[in-house]
Length: 476
Image (cartoon, rainbow, N blue to C red):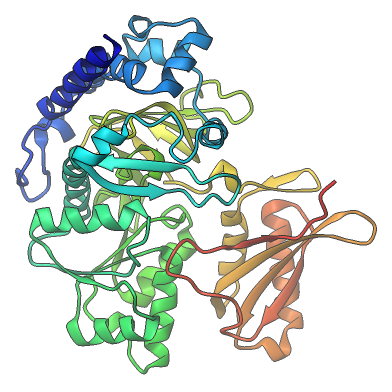
């Protein structure tokens, strides 16, 4: 009987997701892919979310041991979560720690998944993992249904960026277990946009690809966009003269760090756009529109509300934030067979604004984009700040290199100390640079730090998310 209920709720969930794929195959206009979804009223968006929620909740209850157990511990049944208000009032956020504990207790996939071995055998697409840097890696098995849904959602986002059939994109990413690169290439194929795979190549080879084939869109992490530009310069090429018009970034804060954005756009003579998501809940949640990346006015990213419910919560007690209050992002994923989630704590800081955008889209906007994830928050002697705060200090130094490193240690007296290491061509005359950087850090995060100036090329480069923090503090 339970098997029958699980199968019936799965069918109902898949049919519901498909029913809301309006205008699925081609863009409706030069500006908007799906007017019925991207420009509908707030009331219509809420209606879509709640119709999907009505199918999702019983699906999770019948197909995920993790979620069924959570319902029972909270004394709830699926009909208790009929509306978004019910969800936010009665369902505590799901954290990464909960998932890590679950997968440790039930390796290798945990019980949060809705994909059985049978479903995986018959309809599996790809398996993606988190890094596992703070515990057991969390595994997510996505299905062919997920691939189709993610492809469409990501294509809509890329259309909002301004990517068109006339473009050629260079994807500077290795095709490992990282969901973003795979979604990007499927979306580009769906849009019939030509792309160049850059996986498995070093930066020099990619630089030559740019110079030789002149892609109009570059796709990579923000730190790699800076690195690739410098490699081009070392090879005698001007990155600004290569015809790249869009730099499409993901994986690290960039749009919300004005100095980094300005540096990337200046080096490439291109507009930078940003893609936002997470492995746990379908990596297609947020995206730039032309208005949110203008050189004047505030920057922001839209969050896809017909396929997800977005909210922010306070970091101390996970209570909902008030109007115009900054908080941590929480997502309810309404667009997946393999990993739908109810109030998963993504954990990036932003401020949400539900006001209509000049671009015509009505979906909520993350104002200032995203400046740091709660997981990345640094605490030194009781002072809390983000790597992005240090990045702003670093970028304020004229002539500073693109890479930097934050080293945390414990001194002989048992006190936590911080050193910020930068690269600069004037490293032989570092005293003034050190004094300037230490002052900039003190102004921004109100802590005294030591600075080091290194020879350019000393710090490591990577095509994936940059590792900016090295924590060597003694554990107590």
